Image (cartoon, rainbow, N blue to C red; front, side, top):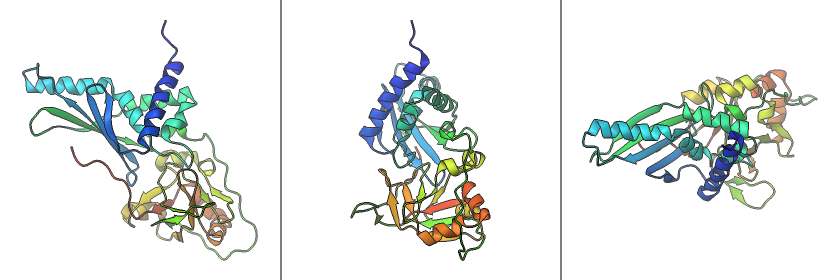
Length: 299
């Protein structure tokens, strides 16, 4: 008798979490399955996990096109497990990796596995000696087929409006500069801010300014809670608009140092106008880092 899919899912997730804890962060390389090797990295600017899966061609197959086709079919057969495992270490928020976030809900795990299985290869290339095939996959976090969509809330509760007079105006978005070591709230330490799918925003009194449960679910599904950038390029400008509020982060918070602390004044400027609250709910936020992890080099 076969075990129910929920039980199978949880068993697989358990191994996924163990791998995530061992790796610590996306970007490690290793064997995801016998005969296969994977290399993965999050492209935070693009909002996607890029995974390269490599397989040595079967030397017993004399025709190169047939050997390549066989290797690619073998990768495709194991794709869901490979990509779900690669997702494990990706930071979701200040307390959870992707693997941990899906471990407690078999239905979410199954939805993520199905999304992973539906991903098409971006490119496939042989090494120069024609011995190994590498297939690259790009898993978008949001948008059509977004791998993080099963983690989204079904509805949002707007941030509470701050009462009283505050000198502010309507902003098109928020640019938060989080470069270099920042105060790690609650400790004498400093830490670099870490990108995540759903970072929270806090003010200096540790009042919650924004989390994913306060965002519009449709906008979350379209492009996520925040965007990440190293410079104010076109994508950052498009997201934050022509007249954003520019903020320097005051610190970071949370087990994974993903949450951003902003000044009390900045929080009041954002939460005292309904238009600015609506802008926050739409995810028109860009966090600017000194450096961001990028995709693996071209195979």
